[in-house]
Image 1 (cartoon, rainbow, N blue to C red):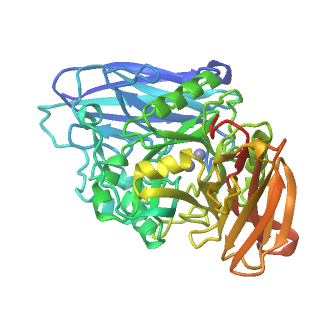
Image 2 (spheres, rainbow, N blue to C red):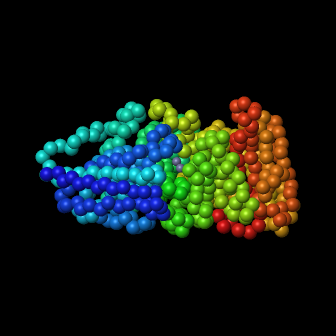
Image 3 (cartoon, rainbow, N blue to C red):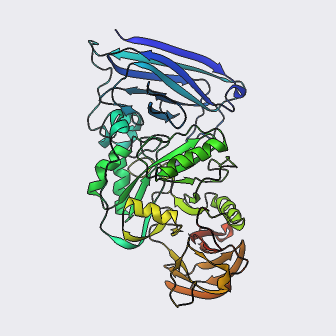
Length: 509
Ligand SMILES: [Zn+2]
Ligand SMILES: [Zn+2]
């Protein structure tokens, strides 16, 4: 006999701030084969980007292994607002949920109240437990090759298939040793931010990886929202692709988003204040991963943990430049002027590319992040290059390329890279900016919030050298700007470097 239960209730905005998560515990008896959950709530937001007024209630689930913040070993999946039902069994689960043993004991549905109308929100959650010896088959049959179905059928892809992750592997398996690439020594390009059908994207992992390869990207991070069920698919595809695939998660809180790269475990997103946001950053960094504040601009959504200072990177460029990136640039430059050292990175935040219906007009590599890797190209080497700030960005994978270097010791070799520091006591220092494929663009050299130089680039391999007394300065960086569309719309940034810093301290210090 199947066992059904339901939960319902009403919340008002004041009930869910500052604590927006509600847990609905229920008992799962031994020998349960499958859990099905569905839910609904009043006045849901509509529209492609959730910009309309309305309620938004996220959903996720934990098994009996626990749900404490940053120690939630029982995490079994999350789907935000983009699915109204999900299921978990030992052999299959809805994308975003982790298949595996249905452990007996207390499970908990988690509701996350992202936004609630003044008049409040009524919710209803239904849970159905199917015992192992249930006579009838599962209510729906799931094609084994669901990942290869047409993309417009996104909702029907939701369950099972090779992309679903096994719970036990999350808990017990060592990190899979994804093979390193043999190429090395030089600048490599990639995209650090995109989504698949494992969260709110419309493409399979395989489609995204194939597109990255076609674009000539050297590395790619897939960062689905608040889940890691796409990692298993990345591990499966890694041996057959020249693209270094970096496991990621976009930690999506109600006060801003961050991207974590390099961990092979789920990272908690239930931050409600700056202290918790810093704890998440420490969790990632101490385990050898890397983490970035995402799209810190009003349309981001914005980053509102004002006192979270534990983040070594910032996504200063998300999606094409005109998507309000001036605001992120101003924020980042303000931090640099205060002496903070925070690595600027880019991310396309791609959610859909052909053959899926395109939700946005851009795709992978818009922008592209370029990283200097001194030895073999591996995931760890890419992350280490980012850690050191050896990074610039271009509007597309084809460039333009923008290299800022300095000859700090006056030996004629420009071995100081963006992200590195030079000492103020060096006095006058020679700098060199090299712009490739940037003819007709303008080069801006910026120091401490002011323009040092503004030049017309007149060739496809343009070099600008200058010397500067660095005493009293915090940083020097470069941008390429050019016209896009109608002249009255003004210039956009088409390339930008990380700074060369002045003085002691290190990146992220
Ligand atoms: Zn985001
Ligand atoms: Zn995103």
